[in-house]
Length: 596
Image 1 (cartoon, helix red, strand yellow):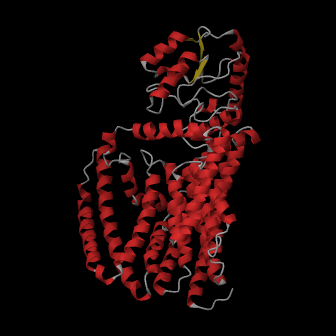
Image 2 (cartoon, helix red, strand yellow; image 1 turned 135 degrees about the vertical axis):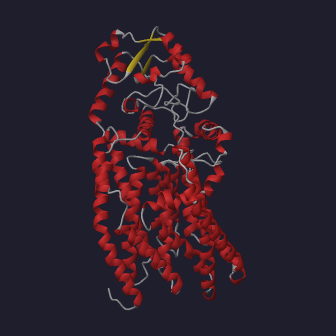
Image 3 (cartoon, one colour; image 1 turned 60 degrees about the vertical axis):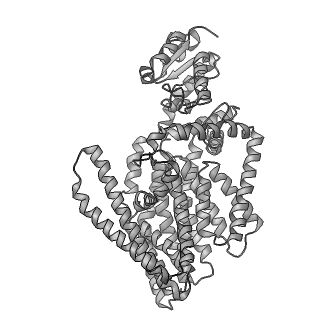
């Protein structure tokens, strides 16, 4: 590797700094991967395992077992149960998913820079390794231990790898691979369609390529998914039951509409949540010092790269003023909201924040006035089109992250593929010959290395060690489930009823499946969905089940009507067929008083 130019010296310095950052990141990643192989399943993962067992038991998804999600995680858990008997195969896959992020980031950098000189190639590859490792740690922290978002993010990044493998052609083989990656991503959770679109918009730069590289694979993947679900008998129930209940009841019914209009926490009308773009850089990417600035520098380069040589400085100056105005006004709004929220919680006077708010508003307005003043000096239409592209990408990403009523911790991983797509733009920018654009790229490089040298205060090695005390007591749980299965077989009972999600450690491990369609039935409304059909199914299950297995505290919190209905039909008297297998530790078992 020969150093010939001034830029080569800078790239060589970046290589040295990246190599200095990698040992700590590698150790943290290793401990994180070990945690994924041993960590306990969260409640959502136990639900996926229950669906996987139902698939193996021959149930029809959505009609007999409703999870409110696409079938991807259920199918993966069915495979895991078939191979390892429990979740261990899924834990192995989770480790591969986390480790795959830095590997794919590194390969992306190499493929984009494959025709460049060695110093630039080495810089991009090492920066890809640092950047990818940081987001692998971030993904594991936010959505590890067998969560849907980490798996979906992996497949979107795999799609980006197919996309960037060769910029000169897009063969039918790559169309097929892109289609498979797409189907696997939104087959785990539908919102990944928007993540795919946002990521593709950043990388695909003309209409013809967008049709072949995004729209064509998307249509093929939809057709493939529909055929697979039709063969399995799930397609009609998916549209007539799952989507209907989700769109009409689950999303709309969780919070009253009049509450959702208030801009406090997650109570914001659904489309408006996409306007909360700062959450992508404060709560998510801001998790690592410097990464936010790296991404902002990269997004800056998009309209600058598209400008002509003699326009670049004017575009840069205009963008600086515009971003300054938006940043300081956002800072003022964030300070006001933070003070308002804390005042509600702690009843504290936050008038001391007033000077910060006023100064931010004044400077932000000044920046915006300068922006308007300089409009005539730049190719405004071209820059506006590029800014609209960046805004659309960030809007779609923020919309998906904020899709839940609250900003769920794991939902921030929806944005990880977009962060990787921004990295691809950054690597492409490294090839630019223009000094201004290259300087912005070098600034982004510096911030990436800074994040690697000074990672988050959270030491992932310590975090992994600390969480080992939560390690799943798989043997004890499985023994309890086996005991329950033996009781059900001896009493010739095919299914049991649960009244909530609390005994998930039991029903996720039994070979019998709980009564559906909604196995997380809520005693207060009849179901977590505000649906008459599912409420009726809940009442029907109470009236027809042979046995109820649940936690004692559940029965103490039942509404009077539900409690009376159960007391009238069930008893704690143990029939002879179950006597040898009871008690089930930590669970209450009720039997029907008389056969139906």
